[in-house]
Image (cartoon, rainbow, N blue to C red):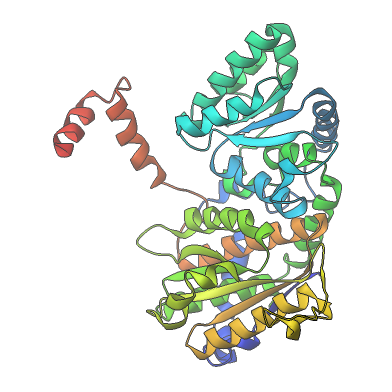
Length: 443
């Protein structure tokens, strides 16, 4: 495996006996997944997904991606939460955070329908002016407010620009296989459709058409992504103290020791959106029943100049999980400067990655000495296979960790609360009584 758990910086915080003491509980959580007998067991389709996926649809995804690449300058992916985070994370990780600014043979990709900001949508629409466009709307129901609103606008734009006949060849829907508003519309209009499986929740869906179509459009090799996930599935299917299960156990040990926040740290800005995906995965999965670690994230050394003081000397509510990427995609050799006016010649005659490595080493020592536990997940490089492994590693760890915590890792009942209030205040039919009650509270 190219992913390895390094626990040497935890020695003063967690004893080996504590990890061993979790073994029986980890085995019980493992069995809940394997026997599909735990809470939320209807949503375990992701467990065998790397080996048991629809091969015919997978080929259609690749074929559609090639047509899209030839057909448009701008590809619009419409979705919220798990319907966009994984795809955007993959593209920024595997290509670049500057993907849209690079010279390339693939279209620019913009993600909309993940907020209700009129400014954000207007700016994306202005970018699309004079460009050829294709759209991928991703929604199981088709009625989730943010993506449905954005799709309404882009559907109208494409039909005005190209006419209904051509527009239908430029719209791709990823939705329920049999029912729902978007499925009905797609069948009526003749959009090519891809399936959101009933047994795979949104935050676990990056290795389905939900994530794979936009990722393939960006020119990433989705065959290799699935190969990496398959390797991870094979290794993490065994209850033998594997790194994935140990990480899940460590998270729960930290929680029981009073830690309230897990901060996912990387030293590469291309990992930033992966951290956003991580935050949804663990936040929605564990944040319920008054339990759970708050998932946070930082990019170092950038955030050492903003949050570093709090991490080092603030209240000890945090532990860090550091993703240590051993080999950067690119490097810069630092030349000696005979003037040395900035006094930085001590950094020269070596690659810049060495400086970044010493920043990591110095920080992990400072933080652990300051009382902040550090878990390190080592990744040899950022490529498609490793991306697939990373995704599966965190998905499996999240499921195990949720069962150790005693919650259903696959539902999100709290998400509905704000929606009900928003619908009522907007005057959605059926919410009249609630609207009056809320408006009174807002006075």
